[in-house]
Amino acid sequence: MSVLVINSGSSSIKYQLVDPDTGEAVATGLVERIGEENGLIRHTYGDRVREIEGPVADHGVGLETAIGLFEEIGPSLTDGAIRAVGHRVVQGGKYFDGPALIDDAVQAKIEELCPLAPLHNPAHLKGIVVARRLLPDVPHVVVFDTAFFQSLPDEAAVYALDRDIAERYEVRRYGAHGTSHHYVSGRVADILGRDDLRQIVLHLGNGASVSAVESGRAVETSMGLTPLEGLVMGTRTGDIDPAVVFHLARVGGMSIDELDTLFNRGSGLKGLTGENDMRLVRSMAAAGDERARTALDVYAHRIVKYIGAYAATMGGLDAITFTAGVGENDADLRADVIGRLEPFGVKINQELNAARSKEPRILSTADSRVAVLVVPTNEELAIARQAMSLV
Ligand code: AMP
Image (cartoon, rainbow, N blue to C red):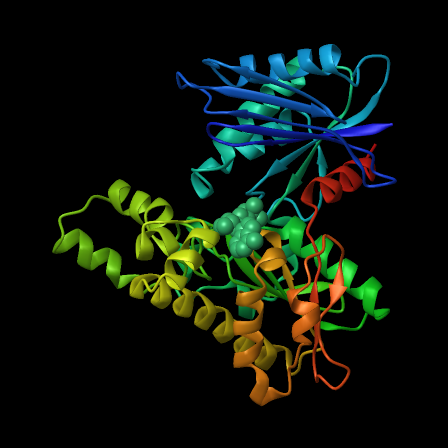
């Protein structure tokens, strides 16, 4: 019995059929460039791959085609083969501190929260509406990126903004990537055999965030009202003086929408180097590109700054864990970050760090004051298991 996990973006749908017991991804698929001329649907089941190129009119057509591919390429979704559909949603606001069975009321709440996640929630909603229509006989469960961070203490979640305005417009730190931080910090507790850890989890992908987790409970995270705050990301600024907005509006004549696009899509590594893919930035730096070198330094410096801050706010630190595309694969970045922490007695074995592996692993030396790990994230499995917990 499997769970179909759906991550619906503004112009794409990623899906995975997951066995929640073994963690196996039974089948995976991707619908890309929805609404454009050069759409693409790719479905993979074992060694069978089917690609369909051509326009995909909307999310409905995309998902309908994907469900058809399950019947054509396999495995069939009929006859009770799936136990639930799990949907990823970025913003659950103050309403959801865990997964929720989708009914019309939950769907309406997700819609109500669109102003807080204008780039994400509307896209998720499209996927939910279409999936509920196409798969009406299975329970649909929504898993929120913000849920794990509903436990943040006020001192971490409250911005020092006028209270009335913050309350009226629901401005606070909600965080994001919570499903990943929850999953990875749980794995670390298993691996180290302790549930009283003070942990820092670095989710470094195209989006990037860091969290502080004490005894399994999130106490800090770098993403804020939206996923824009915090670390340097593929295309997002991360932390920046809010007055840059006033300055660029007044002096640069830029509109709010232009600034939104600049900060979310044209900044970060892309803004600094022209490329958002860390591998390309690294090869540019290796070829002597000064701007790429500076970008790598800004990227690592920001991470170290957060590690110091979170170690201080937790009053100590037991484990630092790297995850997601950059965190799992970029040994140079890990060596750079941990090298900057050496004065605090954090040490890794360089051979273990350089070894390529898809498995969770400990990199720190026996005498390191803090454990350092790589734990591959698996948001789809985490969503599948959370969905199963409700059905
Ligand atoms: P994600 O969003 O988790 O899929 O991560 C995507 C990011 O991981 C991209 O910026 C990739 O450049 C980066 N990435 C993937 N493989 C590597 C690698 N071997 N070295 C450095 N970065 C990588």
